[in-house]
Structures are given as C-alpha cells and as structure tokens.
Amino acid sequence: MSELHANEKVKVEIFGTAVKATYSATDTKQIQKVIRDKLLLTEMEPYFKVDVVVKHKPNGKPEALIAYMLRAYTYTADVVRLDIDEQYNVRSIEKSYVDTVDEFAEIKTPDLKLKIPHGGLRPLRMPDMVFATPVPEIATAKAGVETAYKIATSAGYKAIKLLGKDANLANYKRYLSGHLKAFGSIGHGYTGGIVLSDGNLTSQWFSSLTRAALKPEVIYFNSCQVFNPPLEPSIIKAGARTFVGGKINLLIGPSEEVFKCFWEAILNKKAKMGPALIACEKQKYPVQNAHGIAGDLGPFLPIPK
Image (cartoon, rainbow, N blue to C red):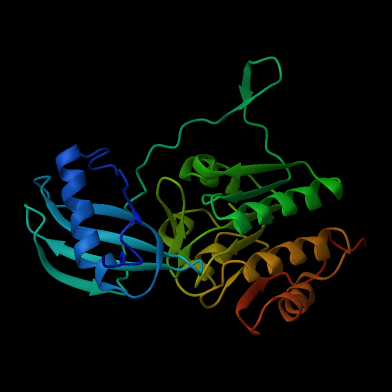
C-alpha cells in the first residue's frame, strides 16, 4: 500500500468576493480538485492550508484561480495564479504571482458589537491593544497571542484577543484604523499582505487609507515577507508609528518566541523598540536579520519632556 502524499489531506477553502459570495457544491469540488491535482500533489513543500480566490470575466464566468498556499513550517503564503477556462481546465500556471488588484476590497465590514456580561450589545469601544491570529489551531500561534495579551494586561493596558474566525477582515480593518496603541498579529503572509480567516488584508487597503489612519499604532505582523514592498511602505505611509514584520520566511515556533519577547521587553522592561527587536532575535531566533522594524525605534511610551 503506497503512502499518501504529504499534501493529500490539505484543506482547500474558497473565499467569497464581491463578485460571487459562495460557490455551488459542484464548482467547489472542481476548484478543489484543480488545486490538489495541479498544485498540492505536484509540490514537495508541505502545506497547512490553501485559500483560493476565483477571478471572473465581466460575464461572471471563471477566468483564473489565485491560490494562497499556506506553508506548514513557516508563516509563508505562496501565491500562484492558474488561468482556467469556463470548465476549470487549467491553461497556464504562474508561480510567485503578484496580485495588483485587491479582491477583498468590497467585502462588507459590518458595524462591530461587543458582548457585555448581561447578554446585551453595545457599540464597539476601542481597546488599547489587539493581539490576533486566524490560525489558533497552530499551537504556537495561539500561545503567542495569549502570552502577548497577558503581557499587555499585566502592564496595565486594555487588550483583547481575536482568534480563528474573529481574526477576519472586518475586525482587522476596524481595529487597525481605530487609533490603538498596538496591534500584534500571527499568521501567514507574503509581500503584498497577510492572510486572515475570510480573506487577505492587502497593501492596496493600507494604501487607500489617509496618512494618519494608523496613528499612533505600533504594528507587528509575525508573518513571512511582510517587511518588503509593497506592504511595508504602505503601512508606514498610512501613519503607523512603528512597523515590525518578517523580512524573509519566518519559522513557525521560533518566530513566536521573538514576538513574545518583543512585547515583554517594550511593555514591561521599558526597552527601546529597535534594540528590543534585535536583542530578542539574537536570543530566540536561529538566524539574524530575519525581522525588520521601521518608524519610531525608541521607547514604546514617549519619554516625558
């Protein structure tokens, strides 16, 4: 009996977009089969999950599949475009695809509500800090968020956690543009964005913001390749005080240790942010210069005048 391919059982999920929110069972099976046969089963790289966006022609017929292939051992999203005909037959495959259109821009972001103890609802009140991961099934990702949350609350800040389905586009967009003190996220990424539970938060979205939209946030995306154009400059241009992210492919496990160390250093030990990141990487990560930091590199709290 032959062994299964490493990617045989990888989950393939199809994201809805403004063009088409859901797909029939028949279309879903066809799309999943294409991704498995043409990508997953031809790759030696182990994958954790694949998210797919279907691009459509003006008449609504399918034109291409954009596959965001989330690696199993790093927080890397490999982006691949498959041009298809209307019956999902593959015409060509483009690896390392650069998507210049934000397929998720028109996904509705409903007004957020927070539950209160007596079961009612009240309008969203912004916390000081948010820590989130769309992949809490990765134990080290969930632990990283839980630890950062505890560090923040022990330092006296009002913080919340977003796990799994709550780490979605609506929540990320609302909180990131809510003038928080800090936002930390752990999950897969690429040079153009990060992958969330219901879509991708892209450089195009950050570029659409006004210059002061992210002020005064310290943003840390524990994701691969995000400290590169076009994502890194779009975040800084939108007003982030400081941005930290992966320059290269970040290992799952060691990268979260740097993430936890950074928040402990700047919130409780009052270390300067630039030196803290360098020190944490030296202590916790197997190679140096895997992370980048831009913007204000000084203390998290402004030095009193």
